[in-house]
Image 1: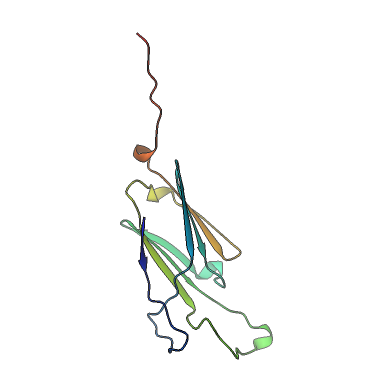
Image 2: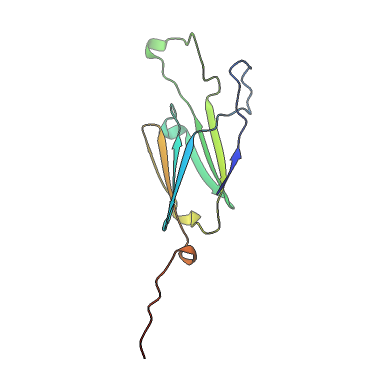
Length: 127
């Protein structure tokens, strides 16, 4: 799996429509597939989008800060409210069986290996 990075915004520049933040991502592989964890703080479930097209997995999310009592931000260090990260997936992965969970701002994706890519034991018969 390889990463295709989006454009990261600088705090001192005006926010442009095409600027996005890249979420931090950890990827773990085992015999059965990969598990990907993406940090998406401030993104509600309804503003999170995942899609696979061809061999590319794309994660997109938009922060939705809620200010108590209709308040106004007086200092903003994260000037870009959008996340985007894209990954090229190996053909060994079964993209039809991706499972996703989202809790406390952390996205967990499990992508199993395709049956042809999994290790298998071959029984040897006597005789």
